[in-house]
Amino acid sequence: MLQEYMDRKYRTDNKPSVEANLIKNNVAIVGIGQTQYTKNSGRDELDLACEAIQNAVDDAGLKMSDIDGFDTFILDRLSLPMLINSLGTPNVRFSCEVSGGGGAGCAVAVHAAAAVATGQADYVCCYRSLNEASGHRYGRGDDFIEYMPVALTPNYGYIWPLGFVTPLGWAGVWGRRWMHEFNITREQLGWWPVVLREYAQNNPEATYFGRPMTHEDYMESPMIVDPLKLHDCCVNTDGAAAYIITTVERAKDLKQTPAIIAASAQCCPIEQEIQTIYQRPSISGLVETWYVGQELYRVAECGPDDIDVAQLYDPYSIGGIIQLEELGFCERGEGGKFVEGGDNIRIDGKIPCNTAGGLLSEAYLHGWNLVIEGVRQIRGTSYNQVKDVELSMVTGGPGVASSGIILRR
Amino acid sequence: MSVEYNADQKIPHPAMWGVLYKSSTPFWDGVKEKRVMLQRCKSCGYWLNPPRPMCPKCRSQESEWVAAKGTGKIYSWVTFNESPHSAFKTPYEAVLVELDEGPRIVSNVVGINSDELEIGMPVEVTFEDVAEDLTLPKFKKVG
Image (cartoon, rainbow over all chains, first blue to last red; front, top):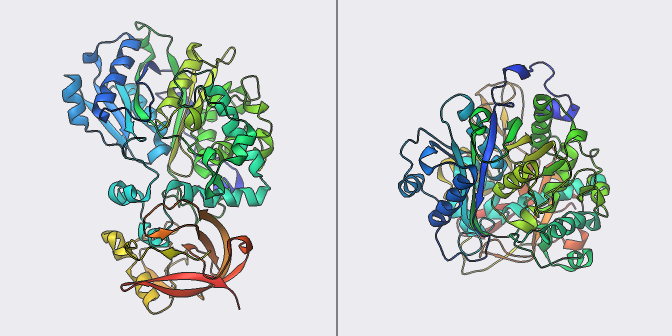
Protein backbone atom coordinates (compact mmCIF):
# COMPACT_ATOMS: atom_id res chain seq x y z
CA MET A 1 0.00 0.00 0.00
CA LEU A 2 2.84 2.39 0.79
CA GLN A 3 4.35 1.77 -2.63
CA GLU A 4 0.96 2.24 -4.31
CA TYR A 5 0.75 5.54 -2.52
CA MET A 6 4.26 6.66 -3.48
CA ASP A 7 3.49 5.79 -7.12
CA ARG A 8 -0.05 7.20 -6.85
CA LYS A 9 -1.39 4.04 -8.44
CA TYR A 10 -4.51 2.90 -6.70
CA ARG A 11 -5.36 -0.80 -6.52
CA THR A 12 -3.88 -1.77 -9.81
CA ASP A 13 -4.41 -5.48 -9.30
CA ASN A 14 -7.43 -5.90 -7.04
CA LYS A 15 -10.60 -3.91 -7.54
CA PRO A 16 -13.74 -5.27 -5.87
CA SER A 17 -16.73 -4.58 -8.11
CA VAL A 18 -18.81 -1.52 -7.35
CA GLU A 19 -21.99 -3.48 -8.11
CA ALA A 20 -21.25 -5.89 -5.26
CA ASN A 21 -21.04 -3.07 -2.72
CA LEU A 22 -23.99 -3.58 -0.38
CA ILE A 23 -23.73 -0.17 1.26
CA LYS A 24 -23.72 2.04 -1.82
CA ASN A 25 -27.11 3.73 -2.25
CA ASN A 26 -28.77 1.20 0.11
CA VAL A 27 -28.02 2.83 3.45
CA ALA A 28 -28.70 6.32 4.78
CA ILE A 29 -28.31 8.59 7.77
CA VAL A 30 -31.86 9.40 8.82
CA GLY A 31 -31.63 11.13 12.18
CA ILE A 32 -29.21 13.59 13.78
CA GLY A 33 -29.11 14.95 17.32
CA GLN A 34 -26.83 16.81 19.66
CA THR A 35 -26.70 18.57 23.00
CA GLN A 36 -25.46 22.09 23.55
CA TYR A 37 -21.72 22.37 23.09
CA THR A 38 -20.28 23.99 26.22
CA LYS A 39 -17.09 24.38 28.23
CA ASN A 40 -18.60 22.90 31.37
CA SER A 41 -21.67 20.75 31.01
CA GLY A 42 -22.04 20.04 34.72
CA ARG A 43 -23.38 16.61 33.71
CA ASP A 44 -21.75 13.27 33.11
CA GLU A 45 -21.16 11.77 29.67
CA LEU A 46 -23.92 9.21 30.05
CA ASP A 47 -26.43 11.93 30.79
CA LEU A 48 -25.32 13.94 27.75
CA ALA A 49 -25.43 10.86 25.50
CA CYS A 50 -29.03 10.08 26.43
CA GLU A 51 -30.13 13.58 25.45
CA ALA A 52 -28.29 13.56 22.11
CA ILE A 53 -29.59 10.09 21.23
CA GLN A 54 -33.16 11.02 22.13
CA ASN A 55 -32.82 14.07 19.88
CA ALA A 56 -31.55 11.94 17.00
CA VAL A 57 -34.36 9.40 17.45
CA ASP A 58 -36.97 12.18 17.52
CA ASP A 59 -35.40 13.85 14.49
CA ALA A 60 -35.69 10.60 12.53
CA GLY A 61 -39.30 10.05 13.61
CA LEU A 62 -38.44 6.78 15.34
CA LYS A 63 -39.10 5.36 18.79
CA MET A 64 -36.21 4.67 21.14
CA SER A 65 -37.18 1.01 21.16
CA ASP A 66 -36.53 0.84 17.40
CA ILE A 67 -32.77 1.22 17.98
CA ASP A 68 -31.18 -2.23 17.85
CA GLY A 69 -27.52 -1.38 17.32
CA PHE A 70 -24.89 0.93 18.79
CA ASP A 71 -21.60 2.08 17.37
CA THR A 72 -18.79 4.38 18.46
CA PHE A 73 -15.00 4.40 18.48
CA ILE A 74 -12.50 3.76 21.22
CA LEU A 75 -11.19 6.26 23.77
CA ASP A 76 -14.46 7.48 25.20
CA ARG A 77 -15.58 7.10 28.79
CA LEU A 78 -19.05 5.83 28.34
CA SER A 79 -20.34 2.46 29.44
CA LEU A 80 -22.45 0.89 26.70
CA PRO A 81 -24.29 -1.38 29.18
CA MET A 82 -25.26 1.66 31.25
CA LEU A 83 -26.30 3.48 28.11
CA ILE A 84 -28.59 0.60 27.15
CA ASN A 85 -29.87 0.40 30.73
CA SER A 86 -30.74 4.08 30.56
CA LEU A 87 -32.25 4.22 27.07
CA GLY A 88 -34.26 1.06 27.58
CA THR A 89 -33.60 -0.30 24.12
CA PRO A 90 -34.91 -3.86 24.39
CA ASN A 91 -33.62 -5.41 21.15
CA VAL A 92 -29.94 -4.51 20.81
CA ARG A 93 -28.25 -7.10 18.62
CA PHE A 94 -25.26 -5.20 17.28
CA SER A 95 -22.57 -3.18 19.00
CA CYS A 96 -19.23 -2.01 17.74
CA GLU A 97 -16.29 0.03 19.01
CA VAL A 98 -13.93 0.88 16.18
CA SER A 99 -10.16 1.28 16.59
CA GLY A 100 -8.19 4.24 15.29
CA GLY A 101 -9.31 7.17 17.44
CA GLY A 102 -10.35 10.19 15.39
CA GLY A 103 -9.42 8.40 12.20
CA ALA A 104 -12.52 6.32 12.81
CA GLY A 105 -14.66 9.47 12.71
CA CYS A 106 -16.41 8.02 9.67
CA ALA A 107 -15.48 4.36 10.15
CA VAL A 108 -18.20 4.27 12.77
CA ALA A 109 -20.71 5.11 10.07
CA VAL A 110 -19.05 2.59 7.74
CA HIS A 111 -19.40 -0.25 10.23
CA ALA A 112 -22.94 0.74 11.18
CA ALA A 113 -23.81 0.87 7.48
CA ALA A 114 -22.32 -2.59 6.99
CA ALA A 115 -24.41 -3.92 9.85
CA VAL A 116 -27.58 -2.44 8.42
CA ALA A 117 -26.81 -3.54 4.86
CA THR A 118 -26.26 -7.13 5.96
CA GLY A 119 -29.23 -7.33 8.30
CA GLN A 120 -27.27 -7.42 11.55
CA ALA A 121 -29.40 -4.54 12.75
CA ASP A 122 -32.20 -2.31 11.48
CA TYR A 123 -31.44 1.02 13.14
CA VAL A 124 -27.91 1.64 14.40
CA CYS A 125 -27.25 4.62 16.63
CA CYS A 126 -23.75 6.11 16.35
CA TYR A 127 -22.98 8.10 19.46
CA ARG A 128 -20.24 10.18 21.09
CA SER A 129 -20.27 11.96 24.40
CA LEU A 130 -17.40 13.92 25.91
CA ASN A 131 -16.53 16.22 28.75
CA GLU A 132 -13.32 17.26 27.06
CA ALA A 133 -13.33 20.83 28.30
CA SER A 134 -14.26 20.31 31.94
CA GLY A 135 -13.08 16.77 32.44
CA HIS A 136 -10.82 14.37 30.64
CA ARG A 137 -8.81 16.24 28.00
CA TYR A 138 -7.33 14.03 25.31
CA GLY A 139 -4.40 16.24 24.43
CA ARG A 140 -2.80 16.18 27.87
CA GLY A 141 0.13 13.90 28.57
CA ASP A 142 -0.84 12.51 31.97
CA ASP A 143 -4.21 11.43 30.64
CA PHE A 144 -2.51 9.48 27.91
CA ILE A 145 -0.56 7.37 30.38
CA GLU A 146 -3.77 6.56 32.15
CA TYR A 147 -6.20 6.00 29.31
CA MET A 148 -4.64 5.36 25.93
CA PRO A 149 -4.84 1.65 25.17
CA VAL A 150 -1.43 0.20 24.43
CA ALA A 151 -2.91 -1.67 21.49
CA LEU A 152 -2.98 1.61 19.57
CA THR A 153 0.47 2.73 20.49
CA PRO A 154 3.13 0.07 20.32
CA ASN A 155 6.02 2.49 20.64
CA TYR A 156 5.03 4.48 23.71
CA GLY A 157 8.21 3.46 25.49
CA TYR A 158 10.21 4.92 22.60
CA ILE A 159 8.63 8.35 22.72
CA TRP A 160 7.34 9.08 26.23
CA PRO A 161 10.72 9.30 28.00
CA LEU A 162 11.74 11.86 25.36
CA GLY A 163 8.79 14.06 26.23
CA PHE A 164 7.31 13.38 22.83
CA VAL A 165 3.68 13.19 23.76
CA THR A 166 0.29 14.54 22.73
CA PRO A 167 -1.24 14.52 19.27
CA LEU A 168 -0.05 18.06 18.57
CA GLY A 169 3.57 16.97 18.91
CA TRP A 170 3.10 13.89 16.81
CA ALA A 171 1.34 15.76 14.02
CA GLY A 172 3.67 18.73 14.29
CA VAL A 173 6.54 16.52 13.14
CA TRP A 174 4.91 15.50 9.86
CA GLY A 175 3.38 18.94 9.59
CA ARG A 176 6.79 20.61 9.71
CA ARG A 177 8.15 18.15 7.17
CA TRP A 178 5.26 18.93 4.83
CA MET A 179 5.78 22.69 5.30
CA HIS A 180 9.51 22.24 4.64
CA GLU A 181 9.17 20.12 1.51
CA PHE A 182 6.56 22.32 -0.13
CA ASN A 183 7.41 25.77 1.25
CA ILE A 184 4.10 26.08 3.08
CA THR A 185 4.03 29.24 5.19
CA ARG A 186 2.46 29.95 8.55
CA GLU A 187 0.48 32.73 6.90
CA GLN A 188 -1.05 30.16 4.57
CA LEU A 189 -1.92 27.77 7.42
CA GLY A 190 -3.82 30.57 9.10
CA TRP A 191 -6.48 30.78 6.42
CA TRP A 192 -7.97 27.42 7.37
CA PRO A 193 -8.79 28.45 10.97
CA VAL A 194 -9.85 31.94 9.85
CA VAL A 195 -12.40 30.68 7.31
CA LEU A 196 -13.74 28.10 9.76
CA ARG A 197 -14.20 30.86 12.30
CA GLU A 198 -16.20 32.82 9.72
CA TYR A 199 -18.53 29.85 9.27
CA ALA A 200 -18.96 29.59 13.05
CA GLN A 201 -20.28 33.15 13.15
CA ASN A 202 -23.47 31.93 11.44
CA ASN A 203 -23.81 28.82 13.62
CA PRO A 204 -25.32 29.72 17.01
CA GLU A 205 -24.44 26.27 18.30
CA ALA A 206 -20.73 26.70 17.59
CA THR A 207 -18.25 27.19 20.42
CA TYR A 208 -16.84 30.31 18.76
CA PHE A 209 -20.19 31.81 17.74
CA GLY A 210 -20.02 35.54 18.37
CA ARG A 211 -16.22 35.53 18.60
CA PRO A 212 -14.80 36.34 15.16
CA MET A 213 -11.09 36.07 14.38
CA THR A 214 -9.03 37.93 11.81
CA HIS A 215 -5.90 36.62 10.15
CA GLU A 216 -3.93 39.08 12.31
CA ASP A 217 -5.51 37.56 15.44
CA TYR A 218 -4.38 34.16 14.22
CA MET A 219 -0.83 35.32 13.58
CA GLU A 220 -0.62 36.87 17.04
CA SER A 221 -1.92 33.79 18.85
CA PRO A 222 0.67 31.94 20.96
CA MET A 223 2.71 29.03 19.68
CA ILE A 224 1.69 25.87 21.53
CA VAL A 225 3.78 23.20 19.88
CA ASP A 226 5.84 24.83 17.14
CA PRO A 227 4.85 24.73 14.19
CA LEU A 228 1.30 24.87 15.59
CA LYS A 229 -0.30 27.93 17.14
CA LEU A 230 -3.22 28.04 19.53
CA HIS A 231 -5.69 28.72 16.72
CA ASP A 232 -4.29 25.88 14.61
CA CYS A 233 -5.73 23.56 17.27
CA CYS A 234 -9.21 22.23 17.89
CA VAL A 235 -11.40 23.48 20.70
CA ASN A 236 -12.24 21.48 23.81
CA THR A 237 -15.88 20.60 24.11
CA ASP A 238 -18.37 19.23 26.58
CA GLY A 239 -21.28 17.73 24.72
CA ALA A 240 -22.73 14.77 22.89
CA ALA A 241 -23.92 13.99 19.39
CA ALA A 242 -25.60 11.05 17.70
CA TYR A 243 -26.91 9.94 14.34
CA ILE A 244 -29.06 7.04 13.17
CA ILE A 245 -28.31 4.75 10.24
CA THR A 246 -30.80 2.50 8.49
CA THR A 247 -31.62 1.25 4.99
CA VAL A 248 -32.85 3.58 2.27
CA GLU A 249 -35.94 1.37 2.05
CA ARG A 250 -36.88 1.96 5.71
CA ALA A 251 -35.96 5.64 5.38
CA LYS A 252 -38.93 6.12 3.03
CA ASP A 253 -41.30 5.86 6.02
CA LEU A 254 -39.32 8.29 8.18
CA LYS A 255 -39.49 12.02 8.76
CA GLN A 256 -36.39 13.41 7.07
CA THR A 257 -34.78 13.54 3.67
CA PRO A 258 -32.29 10.68 3.98
CA ALA A 259 -28.61 11.38 3.48
CA ILE A 260 -27.83 8.37 1.34
CA ILE A 261 -24.37 6.83 1.56
CA ALA A 262 -22.96 6.82 -1.99
CA ALA A 263 -19.63 5.44 -0.82
CA SER A 264 -17.86 4.55 2.38
CA ALA A 265 -14.27 3.59 3.07
CA GLN A 266 -11.83 2.79 5.82
CA CYS A 267 -8.05 2.43 5.53
CA CYS A 268 -5.66 0.87 8.05
CA PRO A 269 -2.26 1.16 6.36
CA ILE A 270 1.17 -0.24 7.19
CA GLU A 271 3.56 1.79 9.36
CA GLN A 272 0.88 3.78 11.12
CA GLU A 273 0.48 4.25 14.84
CA ILE A 274 -0.78 7.24 16.76
CA GLN A 275 0.01 9.76 14.04
CA THR A 276 3.63 8.70 14.52
CA ILE A 277 3.88 7.62 10.89
CA TYR A 278 7.58 8.23 10.81
CA GLN A 279 8.92 5.08 9.17
CA ARG A 280 7.14 5.64 5.88
CA PRO A 281 9.14 6.60 2.80
CA SER A 282 7.38 9.97 2.92
CA ILE A 283 5.75 11.63 5.94
CA SER A 284 4.77 14.81 4.14
CA GLY A 285 1.53 13.22 2.99
CA LEU A 286 -1.12 10.90 4.39
CA VAL A 287 -1.49 7.55 2.70
CA GLU A 288 -4.67 6.67 4.60
CA THR A 289 -6.49 9.81 3.49
CA TRP A 290 -5.35 9.34 -0.09
CA TYR A 291 -6.52 5.73 -0.06
CA VAL A 292 -9.89 6.63 1.47
CA GLY A 293 -10.36 9.30 -1.20
CA GLN A 294 -9.48 6.93 -4.03
CA GLU A 295 -11.89 4.31 -2.74
CA LEU A 296 -14.70 6.81 -2.17
CA TYR A 297 -14.40 8.17 -5.71
CA ARG A 298 -14.21 4.67 -7.17
CA VAL A 299 -17.32 3.43 -5.37
CA ALA A 300 -19.35 6.62 -5.79
CA GLU A 301 -18.15 6.80 -9.41
CA CYS A 302 -17.21 10.43 -9.16
CA GLY A 303 -14.15 12.62 -8.65
CA PRO A 304 -13.13 15.54 -6.46
CA ASP A 305 -14.71 18.04 -8.87
CA ASP A 306 -18.11 16.44 -8.25
CA ILE A 307 -18.01 16.97 -4.48
CA ASP A 308 -20.07 20.03 -3.52
CA VAL A 309 -19.07 20.38 0.12
CA ALA A 310 -16.62 18.63 2.44
CA GLN A 311 -16.23 18.20 6.18
CA LEU A 312 -12.62 17.20 6.79
CA TYR A 313 -11.56 15.96 10.22
CA ASP A 314 -9.26 18.76 11.36
CA PRO A 315 -7.90 18.43 14.90
CA TYR A 316 -5.40 21.06 13.69
CA SER A 317 -5.16 23.22 10.58
CA ILE A 318 -2.45 21.15 8.91
CA GLY A 319 -4.65 18.05 9.15
CA GLY A 320 -7.38 19.80 7.19
CA ILE A 321 -5.12 21.29 4.53
CA ILE A 322 -3.10 18.14 3.80
CA GLN A 323 -6.39 16.31 3.30
CA LEU A 324 -7.31 18.80 0.57
CA GLU A 325 -4.21 17.59 -1.27
CA GLU A 326 -4.71 13.89 -0.63
CA LEU A 327 -8.37 13.99 -1.62
CA GLY A 328 -7.47 15.67 -4.90
CA PHE A 329 -9.08 19.06 -4.30
CA CYS A 330 -5.69 20.52 -5.15
CA GLU A 331 -2.31 19.18 -6.24
CA ARG A 332 0.10 17.63 -3.77
CA GLY A 333 2.13 20.35 -2.08
CA GLU A 334 -0.32 23.02 -3.25
CA GLY A 335 -2.50 23.01 -0.11
CA GLY A 336 -0.93 26.16 1.28
CA LYS A 337 -1.53 28.13 -1.91
CA PHE A 338 -5.01 26.63 -2.23
CA VAL A 339 -6.23 27.98 1.12
CA GLU A 340 -4.41 31.33 0.83
CA GLY A 341 -6.92 34.15 1.12
CA GLY A 342 -9.59 31.60 2.02
CA ASP A 343 -11.83 31.88 -1.05
CA ASN A 344 -11.38 28.32 -2.27
CA ILE A 345 -12.84 26.89 0.96
CA ARG A 346 -15.51 29.54 1.51
CA ILE A 347 -19.15 28.91 0.70
CA ASP A 348 -18.90 29.93 -2.97
CA GLY A 349 -15.44 28.50 -3.38
CA LYS A 350 -14.05 25.49 -5.16
CA ILE A 351 -14.73 23.22 -2.19
CA PRO A 352 -16.49 24.72 0.84
CA CYS A 353 -14.99 23.01 3.90
CA ASN A 354 -16.16 22.45 7.46
CA THR A 355 -19.14 24.71 6.99
CA ALA A 356 -20.36 24.59 10.60
CA GLY A 357 -16.94 25.66 11.90
CA GLY A 358 -15.31 22.22 12.05
CA LEU A 359 -13.30 20.93 14.97
CA LEU A 360 -11.49 24.26 15.27
CA SER A 361 -14.49 26.53 15.71
CA GLU A 362 -17.70 24.51 16.11
CA ALA A 363 -16.87 21.67 18.48
CA TYR A 364 -14.44 18.84 19.07
CA LEU A 365 -17.02 16.09 19.10
CA HIS A 366 -14.56 13.66 17.55
CA GLY A 367 -16.04 14.17 14.11
CA TRP A 368 -19.68 13.53 14.99
CA ASN A 369 -20.39 17.21 14.40
CA LEU A 370 -18.79 16.85 10.96
CA VAL A 371 -21.05 13.95 10.00
CA ILE A 372 -24.06 15.90 11.26
CA GLU A 373 -23.08 18.94 9.19
CA GLY A 374 -22.54 16.68 6.17
CA VAL A 375 -26.13 15.47 6.62
CA ARG A 376 -27.47 19.01 7.04
CA GLN A 377 -25.87 20.00 3.74
CA ILE A 378 -27.80 17.18 2.04
CA ARG A 379 -31.05 18.16 3.77
CA GLY A 380 -30.52 21.85 2.96
CA THR A 381 -30.60 22.88 6.62
CA SER A 382 -27.03 24.05 7.28
CA TYR A 383 -26.39 27.44 8.83
CA ASN A 384 -24.01 27.90 5.90
CA GLN A 385 -25.95 26.08 3.23
CA VAL A 386 -24.08 25.45 -0.01
CA LYS A 387 -26.34 25.74 -3.07
CA ASP A 388 -27.73 22.61 -4.75
CA VAL A 389 -25.67 20.04 -2.88
CA GLU A 390 -25.65 16.68 -4.62
CA LEU A 391 -22.60 15.13 -2.97
CA SER A 392 -21.36 15.85 0.53
CA MET A 393 -18.08 14.35 1.76
CA VAL A 394 -17.02 13.67 5.35
CA THR A 395 -13.65 12.24 6.47
CA GLY A 396 -12.00 10.82 9.57
CA GLY A 397 -8.79 12.00 11.20
CA PRO A 398 -5.40 12.26 9.50
CA GLY A 399 -2.29 10.21 10.32
CA VAL A 400 -4.15 7.29 11.85
CA ALA A 401 -6.31 4.52 10.35
CA SER A 402 -8.74 6.81 8.58
CA SER A 403 -12.16 6.70 6.96
CA GLY A 404 -14.66 8.64 4.93
CA ILE A 405 -18.14 8.74 3.45
CA ILE A 406 -19.81 10.47 0.53
CA LEU A 407 -23.45 11.35 1.14
CA ARG A 408 -25.97 12.12 -1.58
CA ARG A 409 -29.58 13.13 -1.84
CA MET B 1 17.09 23.31 23.10
CA SER B 2 18.00 20.52 25.51
CA VAL B 3 15.33 19.14 27.82
CA GLU B 4 15.48 20.11 31.46
CA TYR B 5 13.58 18.07 33.99
CA ASN B 6 11.66 18.92 37.10
CA ALA B 7 13.65 17.09 39.76
CA ASP B 8 10.64 16.20 41.87
CA GLN B 9 8.76 14.53 38.98
CA LYS B 10 9.39 11.07 37.64
CA ILE B 11 10.27 10.84 33.95
CA PRO B 12 8.04 8.22 32.34
CA HIS B 13 10.07 5.01 32.11
CA PRO B 14 9.72 2.72 29.06
CA ALA B 15 9.03 -0.19 31.39
CA MET B 16 5.68 1.44 32.21
CA TRP B 17 4.44 -0.11 28.99
CA GLY B 18 5.20 -3.64 30.15
CA VAL B 19 4.43 -6.01 27.31
CA LEU B 20 5.74 -3.61 24.73
CA TYR B 21 8.83 -2.95 26.77
CA LYS B 22 9.62 -6.61 26.36
CA SER B 23 9.79 -6.34 22.58
CA SER B 24 12.10 -3.33 22.84
CA THR B 25 14.32 -4.71 25.64
CA PRO B 26 17.31 -5.16 23.30
CA PHE B 27 17.03 -1.46 22.44
CA TRP B 28 17.05 -0.37 26.09
CA ASP B 29 19.78 -2.86 27.02
CA GLY B 30 21.80 -1.38 24.16
CA VAL B 31 21.27 2.16 25.45
CA LYS B 32 22.77 1.12 28.79
CA GLU B 33 25.89 0.11 26.86
CA LYS B 34 25.77 3.33 24.83
CA ARG B 35 24.62 1.78 21.60
CA VAL B 36 21.55 2.35 19.41
CA MET B 37 20.19 -1.10 18.63
CA LEU B 38 17.79 -1.69 15.76
CA GLN B 39 15.78 -4.77 14.80
CA ARG B 40 16.10 -6.00 11.24
CA CYS B 41 14.49 -8.84 9.31
CA LYS B 42 17.04 -11.61 8.95
CA SER B 43 15.52 -12.77 5.72
CA CYS B 44 15.04 -9.60 3.66
CA GLY B 45 16.77 -6.88 5.69
CA TYR B 46 13.65 -4.69 6.24
CA TRP B 47 14.05 -2.52 9.36
CA LEU B 48 11.53 -3.51 12.01
CA ASN B 49 11.20 -0.19 13.72
CA PRO B 50 9.48 -0.16 16.15
CA PRO B 51 10.21 -3.84 16.83
CA ARG B 52 7.72 -6.48 15.82
CA PRO B 53 7.54 -10.28 15.58
CA MET B 54 6.97 -10.61 11.83
CA CYS B 55 8.44 -8.82 8.84
CA PRO B 56 5.62 -7.00 7.00
CA LYS B 57 7.51 -7.33 3.75
CA CYS B 58 8.45 -11.04 3.58
CA ARG B 59 6.58 -12.43 6.66
CA SER B 60 9.71 -13.98 8.08
CA GLN B 61 9.72 -14.30 11.85
CA GLU B 62 13.49 -14.44 12.02
CA SER B 63 15.05 -11.16 13.05
CA GLU B 64 18.31 -9.80 14.42
CA TRP B 65 19.39 -6.78 16.44
CA VAL B 66 22.21 -4.71 15.02
CA ALA B 67 24.01 -1.64 16.36
CA ALA B 68 23.52 1.56 14.35
CA LYS B 69 26.47 3.86 13.77
CA GLY B 70 24.68 6.51 15.77
CA THR B 71 24.93 9.20 13.14
CA GLY B 72 22.14 10.73 11.12
CA LYS B 73 20.30 13.89 10.13
CA ILE B 74 17.49 15.94 11.63
CA TYR B 75 14.43 14.93 9.62
CA SER B 76 11.87 17.09 11.42
CA TRP B 77 11.10 18.42 14.89
CA VAL B 78 8.63 20.19 17.16
CA THR B 79 9.14 22.63 20.01
CA PHE B 80 6.97 22.13 23.06
CA ASN B 81 6.12 25.53 24.51
CA GLU B 82 3.44 24.05 26.74
CA SER B 83 4.51 21.07 28.76
CA PRO B 84 2.55 17.92 28.01
CA HIS B 85 3.79 16.30 31.23
CA SER B 86 4.98 17.57 34.59
CA ALA B 87 8.45 16.01 34.26
CA PHE B 88 9.51 18.21 31.34
CA LYS B 89 10.38 21.91 31.60
CA THR B 90 9.51 23.97 28.53
CA PRO B 91 10.52 24.95 26.01
CA TYR B 92 12.27 21.93 24.57
CA GLU B 93 12.51 20.13 21.26
CA ALA B 94 11.54 16.64 20.27
CA VAL B 95 13.35 15.72 17.09
CA LEU B 96 12.94 13.01 14.51
CA VAL B 97 16.39 11.79 13.46
CA GLU B 98 16.89 9.83 10.29
CA LEU B 99 19.75 7.47 11.07
CA ASP B 100 22.28 6.83 8.33
CA GLU B 101 20.99 3.25 8.20
CA GLY B 102 17.51 4.52 7.26
CA PRO B 103 15.21 4.10 10.27
CA ARG B 104 14.02 7.26 12.01
CA ILE B 105 13.93 7.62 15.77
CA VAL B 106 12.42 10.19 18.10
CA SER B 107 14.85 11.91 20.44
CA ASN B 108 15.95 15.19 22.01
CA VAL B 109 18.87 17.44 21.16
CA VAL B 110 21.78 18.33 23.41
CA GLY B 111 23.58 21.66 23.04
CA ILE B 112 21.68 22.80 19.96
CA ASN B 113 19.71 26.04 20.26
CA SER B 114 16.20 26.23 18.86
CA ASP B 115 17.16 28.84 16.29
CA GLU B 116 20.05 26.85 14.82
CA LEU B 117 18.10 23.63 14.45
CA GLU B 118 17.30 22.81 10.85
CA ILE B 119 16.11 19.95 8.71
CA GLY B 120 19.09 18.07 7.27
CA MET B 121 21.48 19.05 10.10
CA PRO B 122 24.00 16.21 10.69
CA VAL B 123 23.85 14.87 14.24
CA GLU B 124 25.36 12.07 16.29
CA VAL B 125 24.14 10.19 19.30
CA THR B 126 25.13 10.96 22.86
CA PHE B 127 23.81 9.26 25.98
CA GLU B 128 22.33 11.05 28.95
CA ASP B 129 21.59 9.49 32.34
CA VAL B 130 18.34 11.25 33.15
CA ALA B 131 17.44 9.14 36.18
CA GLU B 132 19.05 6.47 38.27
CA ASP B 133 17.39 3.76 36.22
CA LEU B 134 17.07 5.53 32.89
CA THR B 135 19.57 6.46 30.19
CA LEU B 136 18.32 8.10 26.99
CA PRO B 137 19.89 8.36 23.54
CA LYS B 138 19.99 12.02 22.51
CA PHE B 139 21.63 13.84 19.62
CA LYS B 140 24.24 16.60 19.33
CA LYS B 141 25.90 18.36 16.43
CA VAL B 142 28.53 16.30 14.63
CA GLY B 143 32.11 17.18 15.55
